Image 1 (cartoon, rainbow, N blue to C red):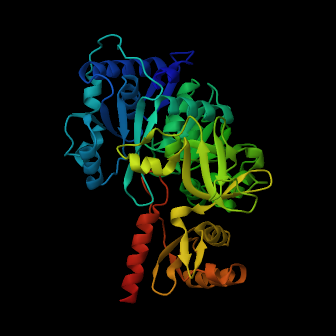
Image 2: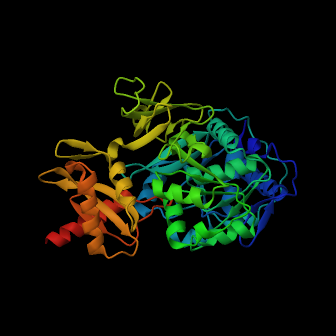
Image 3: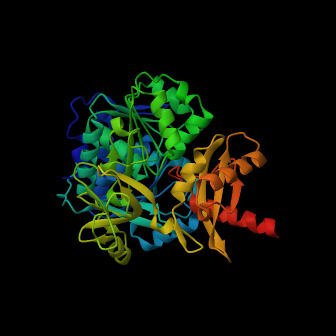
Length: 494
């Protein structure tokens, strides 16, 4: 089934609004009409199975173009709006893009792209009747999402119509979404977590509020103004809201639930949110672009009793933690998270070798290291490629980050490993202070680490920053952070 047809299959009221921005509102009837016209144009001019680049912020333009490309039987290639020129040039040279949809306000940033379709072209499309779309096979690619790996090189994740349908259905099931739900969306739609918000709410006949405020605190106003029932964020989203806005003091009367994925939110922030909003459901989730979006969730009633866990596999996903011999680990042992389900990607675009390195026998080897408790709930301890090797020890940054962040006066902490002639890699703790005197805070951190951590886990250096660099998905950009800290330490030595 064509994924877009699947999304609109449950719409009972065509006149109901589905997309809200600060300026415009779009009904299901209008959205369907715009998507059909553009899909017809693409089918007439491109045919079927062609690649279409899409570069846009969250907007009505993005939604229409994204859905129309998929509905027409073509493939949407999604890249971030701040993609560096060299990476975009590489993607264009290695792909077969027939047309590029670029939001008008961004055109000056991408002057080297040819055959550009903008907002103006969208408004000038003729109404040529129904689109004659060829039958879609489940394994046909619907979208390629370009995501950065641990090396910083962007990899295109190919997701099929079936991938999108089954993962959307599963998320709807465990979140218990219905047509009355309205999500406040701040996460970019070119990111799999952000796209899943769009997918799920269209499928149930709900609605999406595009919150594009310059300052994140504006989401509080949007939630209240638009009577939103849901909100989603990555760790930095909640940390900024807690530390920079009156978020925890708000009532947010219409909000039913919140979700968090895209990395590990420190336990102290989870506790603060649950204590401030005891009547609202808080879902801790785990996923990957290679799994369409979602792999696991922790039921809200267990968030505090299973603090730090990512839960278990979502409906339709078998999630295991396996040792080096492919056997499930016992409680307390560490292994790799492995997933199986119809949401696992078709593969990496143009890269069968890397695809074969992470997918074996239809199972996705995530590279995330984890353990389990006696009840089978999963706890991530680190990422295999982020393990710090120091003085013969293999150390996960997560434990050190969690401990330092638990101390008073700390807003955030990222632990990185940098090359060291003596230790192999030195443990560096990069700390965002909460207004406390840095000299006193540094002494406190080191003293508490010496008191509570093994000697080999004590950071060699404590570096303070006023903010962490974020990537386009609002996650902490650890590669950029590590490079800047290495440069800073080098300059201090000189």
